[in-house]
Image (cartoon, rainbow, N blue to C red; front, side, top):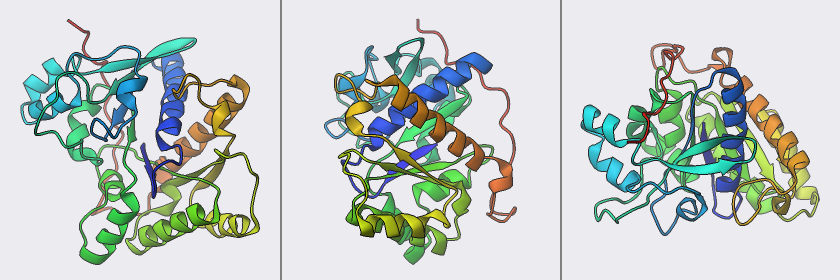
Length: 288
């Protein structure tokens, strides 16, 4: 589940963490499988190195140097995985840049190229991307070069639903409408997009925002409205300060994204994107 936005500061990383925690609780109950939060931003840009409770001795900067060697990657993935504690559940595995700086590491690819070797170890992966996806969609429309969203949606055997995060301002929703229009023009399956409107200011709806929300409603798989951001974060981490609000919103997110990721939501021609259910996942290897 790539978590995307057209601007910074809209709560994308916070919602990625809340979504990962909700999926982690659900998967632990049903399958006992790992859920991973994958951070695509480099250090000094990403908040994740400061949020994790247990830091890997060498994070994604080091893991990126191993991705071409599958055996080395398998040995190093556990040492490169941090963790975020979640009340009442198993920790969330977080892949972010920690440990010694790797001079050649400029951030992980937001698409599946970098993260595919990890997928066989997990039941679900939440990809916290960067605020440049709208640009990539426009570039795809102009040049044909795949956006991160398109790369995920055409990657077999992955079942993908994309979460697009915006604030409720007229400008924020206008950016989202522009991005959705670009995605439509690229031929992406729009029912696999879920828009999360993160009311981080708690200011209700302006008339222009309400009209733009209405325009979005028929063009994407679902719209989920998220409560005030202060009620979703505690101690500057994506952990709920108000479990009732966060649990309700997280349940809505999980339900919408699960429905959007089902094969019936496919709209890409079969020759471009064959669909398979992933083989049973294995747990991330135990730490040495």
